[in-house]
Image 1 (tube, rainbow, N blue to C red):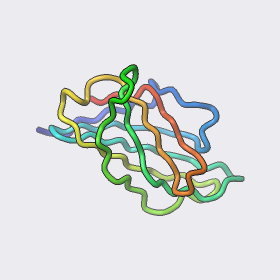
Image 2 (cartoon, one colour):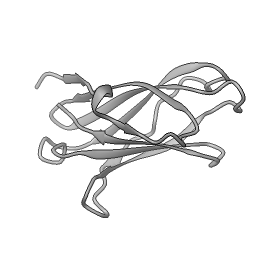
Image 3 (cartoon, one colour):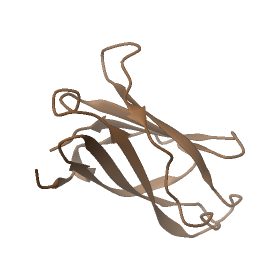
Image 4 (cartoon, one colour):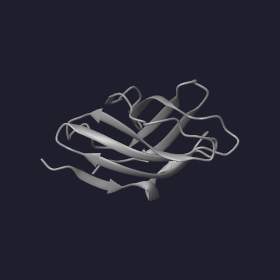
Amino acid sequence: MPVASKEISPTLTVSPTNPLWVLGVTAYRSASRMALAVELRNPEDSPPWMTEGATLALEGKKGVTLKVLPVWQDVSIAPGGAQFVLVEAEAIAQEARGTFTLRVRDAGRTGTVAIGGVTFP
């Protein structure tokens, strides 16, 4: 099966209290995996941000989460800088249906970026 992709930024809900700004999100789906390319910007007055992990939870279904693989991030996001963080999860097509909330946490556990309204093609 080929990889399907979809730009989902316009349909997302992002909290104004997130420690980073969400610049854009593209969703990908294959036969057995899903992925999100999330572009994040770190505010000028914030410490560097390094992602430690992420969760993908089905909205409206308490406790239903996908198995997220280790998050890929090349280097810390410097103050005032922007970078992509790649989140990949194992899921068959039936599990990819619905609307999810993505939570990305930093290595220092000082903050979490929450993004609602995540859907996959």
